[in-house]
Length: 552
Image (cartoon, rainbow, N blue to C red; front, side):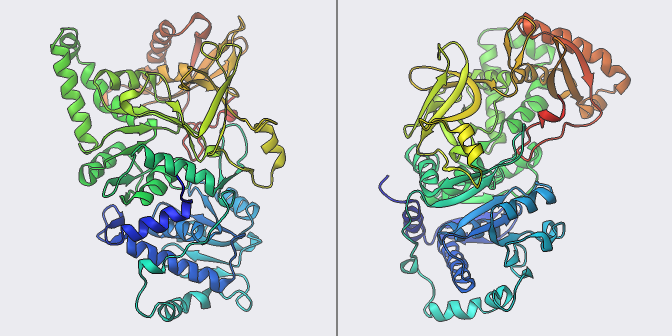
């Protein structure tokens, strides 16, 4: 696309001035694109009075809300750099990120701010509440009067736009493609977080692709329930919809399947962007008990009758997701293969994409009708991919990518940047997989989590864990190596146990049966020697990945 990122938003806001842009689930207020553009203009005026420059960083810490989105867009359309911080980071990590990013101003939710030590935030001139829009703290009221600027904002705004703010008043700066838009701090499962530098061109690559394949369209409805501080939700539940004239409804609650199903029935979204966990929970809680019943199992073995049953299940599932969507795109982690196989068998419109924060995030995607089972889509037209393997189609190797979406590097961390981007410009993803000649990628696991069997075979624990997670009374699994064998650490599904009338004393015998069944499904060199029960859930990153390094 010939337009820059900010030109796309300026045009979208003007063209869609009077149509709904943004609302929060359960709230009556609906912002039009005109309302949204005016709130952005107020942020610009505030920054101007505070002396914020396009080289400055603005930290943003809170759950998905209208205020959060206004602060995000107000920053990138001003030309400054936004630093969105996942609200689930602990206070120590959040403070470290605010300082490391050199943030000048902090937008923060009140409850989170109470847990921070403002005196330890070195570079800030002030902190502004995402709830009340008031100043929570300021460093130097004499030279950088944040409260005074906020107090006078309406007066100055009315003076600047005496006849009201209109589409003709939208003027966003002309920036170089490599201008820094976002610093996104990741929390990996194998180490410390790093600040991924995403440029305007990186975001443009994702947004322009989303527009070109019609992920969203004018007047389409989007239910945003993924964290917008994470690249996946940010790109396709916020950046792309606003570029085309969609109506975003923010789902600010914890996205449990029950609450999500209710919200989807009311919003009836046209596209659903999800992580595997949501689909896997619905499959395990709703579908698996149904198809496990003996009469249903027998009926599914009869030709024609099985088709009717699949059709009925498909309709129930489509209705549960609002009944209006074109497809469900799964990303952020691999989809459990058993779940994927069943969804494809009943012709449910699902596809799996692949990306990483370092690509803002998209690397590969295929429309659901063209989706190849077991894959994570075809490499995007503006990206290249290769497999570091002597036989890329059959022998897994590290997936390497480069192209428009690839980050500029890690903020203030050249050593970490050089460790992942080689001299030819290839980003080494750390994921292992194979690739077909048309660029379709099939992920096998993470290179850092790959285990070596006693016979020298490469073992990807994620594949074993996915099978174990489908066993009775299993909530989550982590496979570790003990000596020359493998052990499955299991946190049991206590809710399912209670519902069955069983006690925890019966769990060891149940897990031993699960182990035997699992070993029938895996290769001989992947056999599990033992199951160890865990009394509590595994500790996870904000992206809900298990922190593997804690359990090795």
